[in-house]
Image: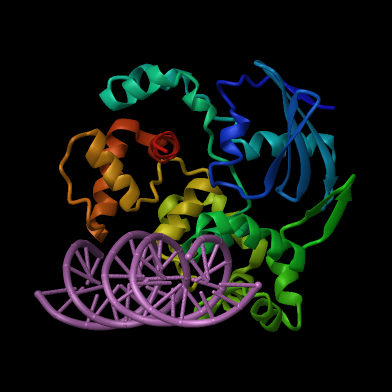
Length: 300
DNA sequence: CAAGCTTGGGCAACTTTCAG
DNA sequence: CTGAAAGTTGCCCAAGCTTG
């Protein structure tokens, strides 16, 4: 079983897998060891921390063609382990709020941004629009159960997240979605899936990785129901653009509070998007979005 | 009578439209 | 092209209603 030298302070599984980035993992406590089981990037994972410095994992099943090397690359990519923050911390500590936070949470860079599939995050981003977070676990589970492939392991069932190609091939897609209450008010997911397929499907979504932020954002916003917020969510989480800040009232309140700015914390208007981005960007540059994610996670 | 269920107003979070 | 207002949607919460 692959073992990796990843220190606890650089990857805190317990936070990262449960801070509303992914809704597809569960904890199993057995023989004094916490195991994390879940589905990500078309693979069924069992992950556990061996000790403070090492992590071990097992790919129980892959829904697509894979081998040990690819799995390892995907593991590193999923947890965004390519990013190392040590060189930046001293610079960032010049910011008083960051400094205070860092001194109280020396392991805060164990809170990483997960790199999930673009399509899965697109779906998730739209779920956030209408679903209370407590219910998202159930909705995603049901969605995968209805449209995905099952893998049985011991007494557990895992379901793949369907691809856009698979979904749009279904004859009764619209009806199945409605029957299972996967709805977005008057609009529906079927329309979105078809649009994505028409734009080039999975290949198109993957190709966004190579485009610059402005272009990728524009491409994403062409889809129905995808506005600036959802697009930025994907840019940050799936496309590794860590300077992008998907902002909302929550972060405005946090900034206003922690930096004593006396902003109007009742309303969130379009120019706030720009303000928040510039405010964080000046301090944290190409990692503004990453830091924002940490701020929000630690603020709970 | 209490506990659970239903309903509706108010509000937040988005997208879309529109004016300058 | 920019930014603000309008439009859309569903959450939240509590009052009222139902049921055992």
